[in-house]
Image 1 (cartoon, rainbow, N blue to C red):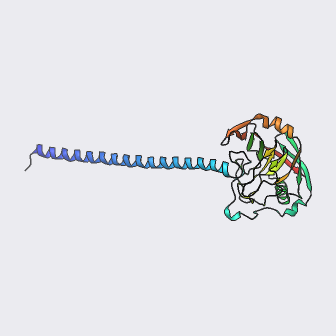
Image 2: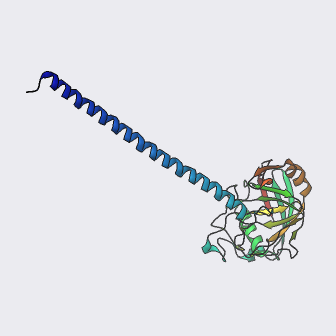
Image 3: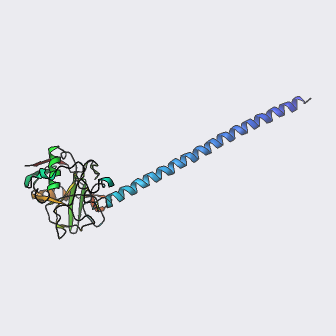
Length: 265
């Protein structure tokens, strides 16, 4: 029969073994948790990096948004929408005539004239947006200026340049043959290489701007600013650019700019 000392030593050995096993379990659990946390962190980093890369790719490839300075547009409509209109009115809404009115950015009132004969589909799209009161409250999210290039772009669905998947149309209409968009030109922004990705967004050239065509051609010119261009330059453009993915010559206006009214008759 084992002595009391031997029994005590055996009991203490069992307790030490249990304590060791408990510590091992805690250690294994902590190791597994650290591994899991590391995996989650790595996945998070990959996702963030992917989103950042996608944002830059979107900005520079979603319609003329390349570093060579051209009016960026919203993301392309889905491939199924390519080559057809989505949510756009019949071009007859433009009545084949000239429409005049006022586009107000902040407090700058711009007289405008839109050509429903030369760009019936795009002008009809704008008329539909005005009738639906789409534009008031939408921002001008992009200002770009460099040698031979000067635009302010407005009308994005969410103020980031994003497209409206329920509204896109084509084809390109009334693009200048010499690729020069004169100061005062109002044209539609679109996605690169997709002539059926016109939508709500438009850009105003406040300087003579040369835009080389892509696979889809040029950019639909809907009309002209007939008054107020100097005020646009002095009260908004002169405030400068908040550098974005396009650098110091291409970003958002330093002076936040909102469409406060858009009327046509």
